Image (cartoon, rainbow, N blue to C red):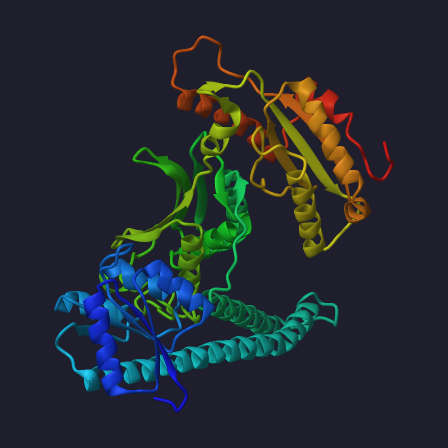
Length: 538
């Protein structure tokens, strides 16, 4: 113990036990400042006002019992050492408590003042050591991140030069090249590209380990992402004489996912399938629904390669793992691709697995969550157990005024979304989650509890807010459309949830039309002509 009074917080509701513990503390050390409360809530309040050096905790309190007591305390005060004082000699509970962060577990009536003093001292010392180790670990991760970032930057510069000058030579811009030298230069170029890919994988893995990978889920049409990934790797497959096919089930709902990250996952899986499939083989990419799982879309990449051994199957998603029995033994990589893929799928709330087909190839499958519009709409479009009389979809199309950087356009879209949030009435309108960004701009959808004429009040608010923003005016133009939403016929006996789902399906179809760039309906076309263009002021 230190020379200064050590503050001890005793959380104990039994007055007799509390007095006995105080007696033991006084017998063992006079330099203590002991406070006692009889409820967990009171203890948490006391700790927030003046953190103690150590907490002595009874598990059975009026407002908390058992393991939940120390879990709540550790969650709210993770840096304070805790010694449990229990009336039960429960080895399993004691082990569980120690594994979750409690420093010691003492049974009431079995310890003397010296043993209690030792337990408190060791708890304080162990907690200080744990805090020091955690800080050291964070510093090491930070140093590793900085080191890898610096090294990658330094490596990318010469790699870019190698790529640039080798490309100049191969294109004949520096003069004719003999055939044998061309082959050597192509090897250099492939090696530079491979090294660049390794650096990217290493940095992505570091970000995954430190929890710095970020995803930005949007409402996307998964078919477009699958087709894009296939198109990007079609030439690679053809060069190896491998057929690359795509099969997308009809009427897949919108998916809640980050399109760039899903594309990254698909490219990695398809690229692996091509590399480990012999010439003349095939790779098939599928997107489909499973009746037993109505909340997910399933995607799979199937190849006709040699398959994966049972030993490799158990380790294939581990960091740095490489299958030594794979067909492409000449491939030199870091074995990080599938680890990154697994992390990206996990961040989406999905799962990924591999099915082994020895001598017939392998199937890598993963899931992504479907967008559930009905749950968002239910409190908005219903009133006293019935659908509202009229609903309107307000569509705001944002387009860049000129060529802007990706970061600048993202900031512009985020600003527009925040302005739109200020225009809606939360109890009657809802701004739907972001749609997949189209190359020509961004589309925002609002469901308003009003007919088209009533929704004009909302559109006027939107125009007023957007016109007031100089940042938005400098970078973008917008147009507004109002489209009536078809409601189920009156007098129907269907449950409210079913009616809401039908409305949600109709809105989803309109949203998918917006993603697909379909031509507007006549009513929508007329509404679009009333949009305001910042560039012209009309």
